Length: 474
Ligand SMILES: [Fe+2]
Ligand SMILES: [Fe+2]
Image (cartoon, rainbow, N blue to C red; front, side, top):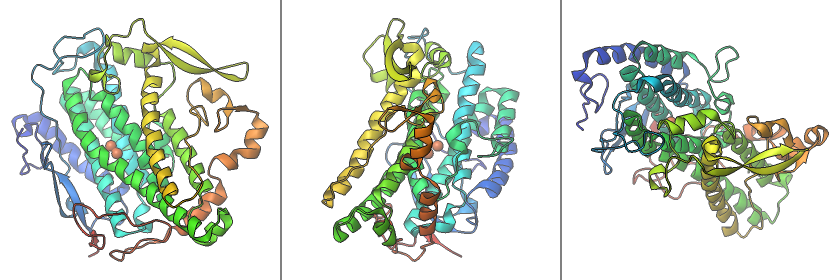
């Protein structure tokens, strides 16, 4: 698995031996760079940023940390090493050798899976484009750019698969990935949450905690795929994804910590007083949490889905940790509980597991999320403040699936349209919350300094001190 860094496109897939593929990707490369200039982090071209760059796929030492000019960042194509004799591990082809080429009958489904994943990567870069102007510290600015370049690399990962395995269709899809725009009326990104705005750093940290975590679960499900190149590609993406969730979890955690410190010191939980002191009150944090959680739950798709059943049965997309689950991996006669509405109430009913696989992946996601929110609550406890953030009911504020047909509050109670209208500002960020958070967004770029509304992290990046110059302005 040699990595070639001398090539125009760094890779460990032997690109130099496949001339036509190399040429096709070298043709796409300038289009990608144009997109990055137009839609990537604004004003970052000339900055020197202390970044990690993927240089191998070995467990230890896959990344190199050094200053890189943003315009010189090298996006590469990296697959995890092949597992010898890997098999399809689930569905009707279970036990057959994993596919090294696309099975003809699954071509369009596989392409759709890859395009849908690929579309989220540039989308988040577009959503985060302007955040650099309001960074709370150099440390955080560097983390933003790190995530941005890696989402760019994730796009490369999917575009490689499209070019290498889907011929002309794949090339067309790769172009389209650079043409859609997050939030665009006429040509939006494919999935809802990726068309929302990420206007401030609280949204950014919530996004990377909640929505990048959806990425983790989707990638884990694809890492089980019987289509081996997809499995190997997504396995490597997961090593990068972990950092994105770290940024989200510690980002919100540091905001929570600062708020709880001020609450303890001033002996108050009054949002107005806390706002006057320049920190983000817990009810506002709760509303942001409710928003990002609910729109991310929608990303898993409809509760009952024949596509999900097909993707599983045909070996294209597995469950989270599929290979570690102890069952028949075919799931024909198994059931799974799903939520539904009946006479204006939420009810749980059994559904065929194969059709409920989106819901099953959502269950895994929810467990992981609750654990993370629990870690935020420990920050509050540590300051001796008797308050808590909570994960809302999974039926709250859903726009996809049967639950979208009703208004459901954070406790899982079906409410009338009138009650929803009257109380939605208690549950979701309203204009005044967004305006307050926006008012906090300044630009802190002095090494070692942090905005007042967020606590400094306990340590710097890659053994560097907190006052290290993580970003150098020319
Ligand atoms: Fe990604
Ligand atoms: Fe990510």
